[in-house]
Image 1 (cartoon, rainbow, N blue to C red):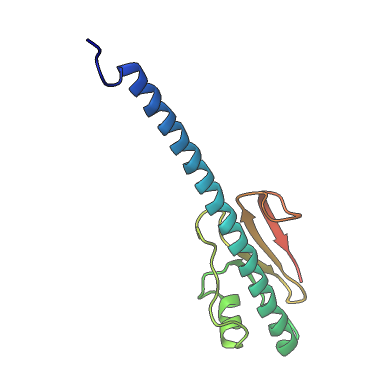
Image 2 (tube, rainbow, N blue to C red; image 1 turned 30 degrees about the vertical axis):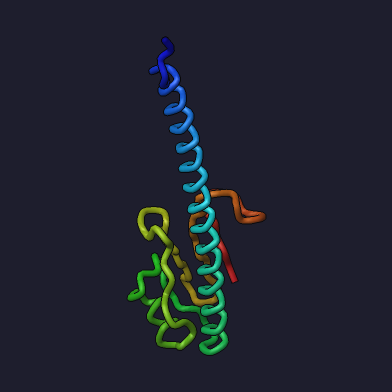
Length: 133
């Protein structure tokens, strides 16, 4: 008489394989999300740069301010009231290092600092990035 069914060892092997595949899919999904956030950051920084370019054409100087874009700070207010941008973008995380930080001490130039999570943007490495006009 033969027994039908699976042994405990066979079931454990199948469960282990399913768990391994699931964890690999989860890691890939997390990496894809991080790449998408980095692409969003790059797009938002370009929007801020475009708004600042319009602002300097209209006002002959950049807003003088040092700090994070909050939507209510001096630089944000200058861009919003100057009709150069409809809404101030924020980093997808918007906490800790993951913020868009603007610095212009004299209005002649500026630096925007932001962070990338991955190396997925061509020509840029993971970590702190700076952009100027």
